[in-house]
Each structure stands twice: as C-alpha cells, then as structure tokens.
Image (tube, rainbow, N blue to C red; front, top):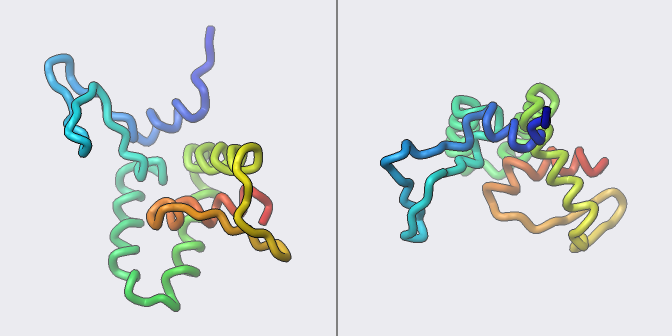
Amino acid sequence: MTQTPPLVSALIDTQALQVAPGDEVFWYTSGTVGPYYINTHYLYGGQQPAQELLEFIDETKDDPHKLPQALYNRVTKMYDADPSYRVVIDALAGLLQSSVRFVGRQKNLVHVDLAWTAKHLFGGPIGVGLGE
C-alpha cells in the first residue's frame, strides 16, 4: 500500500485543497477555470487558525514595533504545535537549503526575499527550520 506524501496529507488535513463538485469549476484570479483550489494560508493549522492569524495581522500591522516579534511568536508556536504546518515549513526550508542561493548571510542572519504574506506566515519558522 502506498503511503500518502506528507505535503499531500497536509493539504488534505488542513482542508487547504478544495476539489470542485463534478459539475462545477473554480474561477481563478487569472480568469481561467480549474477543478481544484488551494487555500495556502489554511496550511497554517487549518481554516480557523489561519483566519485568526490574518485578523491578528490586520489588527497589528500598523504597529511596526509590535508586529514582527508578536507574529514570530505566533508562527513559531504553530510550528511547534501543528504537524501539518511543520511538514510544510520543513519542506520549504529543505528546498531553500538545496536550491536557493541566499541573498546574504552574516553572523547567523539569513535573508531570503519572500512576498509579504509568505514572509510573515512562513519566514520565522523557515529560519528555525534552517537552524537560524
């Protein structure tokens, strides 16, 4: 019997992967259609934790002194607590280690340029996964 790959399990366990019923399709922002949709932010522990995190970011985004540390604390706590999120983060960290040339590195500081949302949802734990 074939075992489900961990990333596929994470997509299913968090309900990030949505499959359209047989007679429906999803409209993508590109204007095309398809049979499935992936809510990547659900990989942060599922729909409710992801929504709570996004609400926290919206409430805190105007406080540049509070947001980075508070967000780091939240996402690293989720990394420690949620196996699906940890699988995703560890896979991203592994991909970075094996195929991305780091932009800069000084005294345990690694800079990888990520989109704003990805940076905040995944950046802190990826640093932890990289051993930084």
